[in-house]
Length: 184
Image (cartoon, rainbow, N blue to C red; front, top):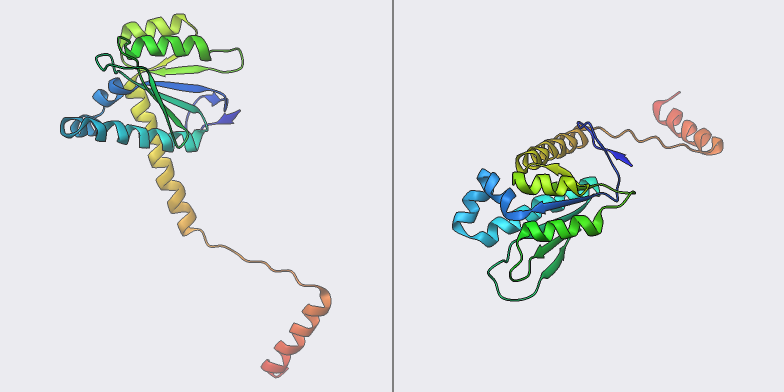
């Protein structure tokens, strides 16, 4: 288990965060602007955010995108610790998420689902998953970004003290050299 700083919860590294991708994109001003230009840019930016989240928390992250009207089978990709699922034809992201919760929820882990769809929140909660609104996830990402910035600044400003220990005979020789140079 690992404590996430500045938060109230403990997380198990076996925990899973399942995200309704388009729901989170539509809740974010930044991602919505990108989506208007190019949907793929918005998806990729969300994936990048979640890769950073995964790298920091070690929580398994799965992002689900609707491919309801796209012909074909479900597609899965791995991207630096983040699983991305495009649903199969005739399957909504909600249906896929519900299936994932059923598969992933065990006694040893928690499954969190990030969506602002109230009906979906109630459904996954009834199946044992914990709900998180899209806005809560975005706030957590902002907080994480702030933590990164603070850690980088603290490490940059930290002066490293180098302490080298020498055996006594080396210390004595160095002391002789120092005294010769200083004239003592």
